[in-house]
Structure formats: C-alpha cells, structure tokens
Amino acid sequence: MVIEQFINEKISQISAYVNAVIDRTIHYTELDQFILDTMEEWTLLSVFDETPGSARERVFWHLMHEFSLHGAQSLGNDLYFKSEITTCLDFFIGKGSYPIDCIGWRPLP
Image (cartoon, rainbow, N blue to C red; front, side):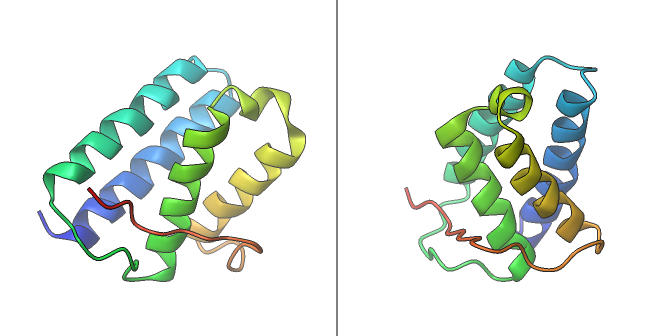
C-alpha cells in the first residue's frame, strides 16, 4: 500500500471516529483502539523516513500523537484538547487553515 493512500484512508477513518466520540455514538475506547491498530498497521509498511509527505499527513500524525499522549477520553474532559482536535479535522475537509502548533512526524520502527 502506498503511504499517501494509507494516510488518506486513515484520515477518513480518524475523522469518523472522532466525530462519533464527540457525538457520543461510540465509546471513546473504540477511538483508542483505532489509534493502536493504526500504529500497528503503520509498522507493517516499514517506513524509515520520518518526514511527512504533505501538510495533511503532518496533521494526521499530530493527531495520532496527541491521542497517544492524552487518550480519546480527553475529548469529553478537556475543551482545549477538543478544540485542537476539531481544528485539525476542519483542516482535513478544507474548512480551516493549518493548525497552530501542529507538529507531526512519522513514527519510525
């Protein structure tokens, strides 16, 4: 699978998961599991370049790292975190500009 295709697929999926957690149609643990599964899938691609190929990919990795650090439960507990995450999702759909303080690097094996 091409990296860009992987990232685009995962952007669609993470957006759906985040919105479902915010709307309380799924439990936050499902988003946490998606993060873990995605990181595992990424290792199977054997990528050794940490530099993202696009701004969208950089924002995606920023989201992945933020959820890895804070957990999806923070969407319900921390308004600043929720705002940061929704700003990233807006960027994905062309509703906003590149998020401030967004630092996203590819994880290396």
